[in-house]
Length: 118
Image (cartoon, rainbow, N blue to C red; front, side, top):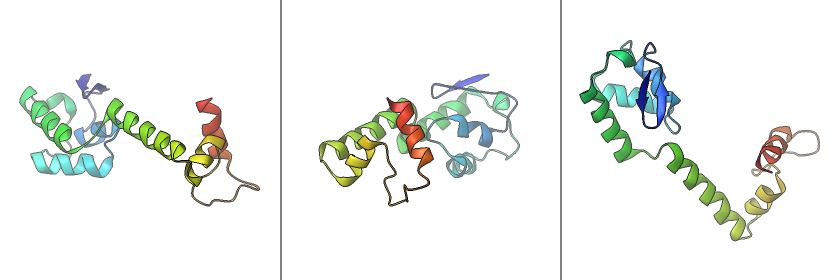
């Protein structure tokens, strides 16, 4: 196990797949980071030296918002729409779809999210 950006990463996984476990880093961002630092596509997280992890952490913290900070920013954005009393904010408070999807038969996912927030 390697602890990186407040996330435990498995040592036997390829670095580009393991980086996607960090909240806020997706597959394309992980691939760009690996290309930028010159990591081989099959290189595992356990084979990286401490200097590589420091480089990676510097780049990620300079250009990307990750982890708890990203969750906080997303929550603030939702609260801002609710405070503005926008249509989108109203739909957030009701737990309904935000972007014009039909609600007569579907919207099960939006209702599921509503259940989790309460």
